[in-house]
Length: 170
Image (cartoon, rainbow, N blue to C red; front, side, top):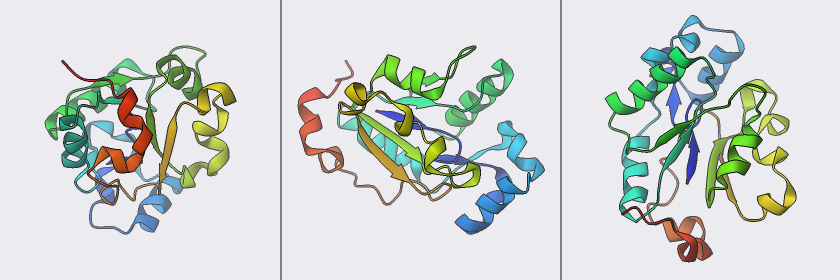
């Protein structure tokens, strides 16, 4: 399972106590806190939800939008500080797009937000995945800054057929 970080399970600190729409507006208006990655916070109970999925045998991986090594480290520290389950933090290399990272890892499930603040569906990763690979991935889209709390705890409800392909963590 590959889960985007910023906008999907993490947000800027000034988004706390704000509506989802206000959070999107803060990004569009370039609120300074959107660039302070070290101070990012979980959206809702994302860490608990992901822990529930991991306890059902799913290998968790995260994907950050950050490419600068210090910013990648900031996101890694935020995940750790906020008790997100262990999992590799993936990022784009030089001259790579998100689709390249996803295609290389081909997760059973990809959870990403709808990219509302940056033009929507054309910016979503699943939109750019090659069809032969896209067919192997269950894509779950959540509203940007809306979190994942509403998704089912039972992984089989995310995709009933995925159980046969679960990557068990030893």
